[in-house]
Amino acid sequence: MFRAFESFARRLLEIRAETSAAVKGTPVDGEPAAGPAAAAPAGPVLHTAAPDRSQPDDVHVQQWKGTWVRGAESRWAGASVLTNPHKSGSTRAAAWRAGWHWADRQPDRRQSGSVRFAHAHRRRADRSSPLVRGAQAGAVGLSMLTIAGWLWQIRRQRRARRAEDVQPVK
Image 1: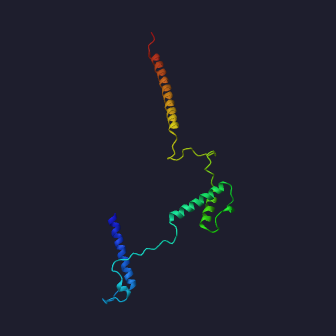
Image 2: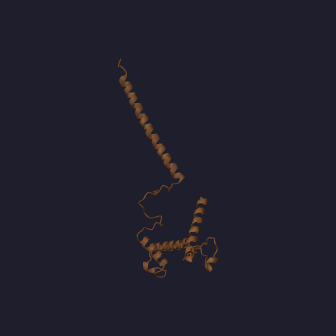
Image 3: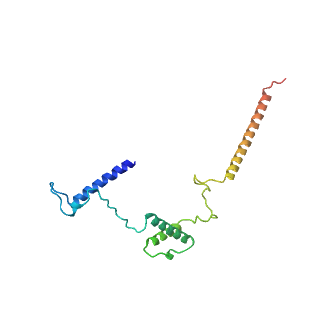
């Protein structure tokens, strides 16, 4: 994997060097080059562009997310959309407003006492406590044993009746 990347990077540098030499002016028909381009180093030169933003992407995203969450919480607290604490037209104001509008259409899921119609463990990753699972397994097992015993008793009663019917009368 590293060799493939190294080969790709080397080829990319060669292409850049060829295109930069063509732009700077290369000798025509074997004539020696004159001027500052002739004194340039023969190896490839890397040109890296600095990012336009002053903050990394992750920091920008985390700030936007935090502002969005504060907007949603403000809506659930009963605040008006006009109480946006950020400067109008800024990305933070837009994030706060987006969070507020999202929360306007969503129930407040932070409250545990609210009535929800979904199953308590609706996701595959949700798990009940070991005590509850044990009690459920015990209740199911006990129910199965009770049903099996009941069926076994019915079976014995039927066999007993058949045995009485088959016996000859003396």
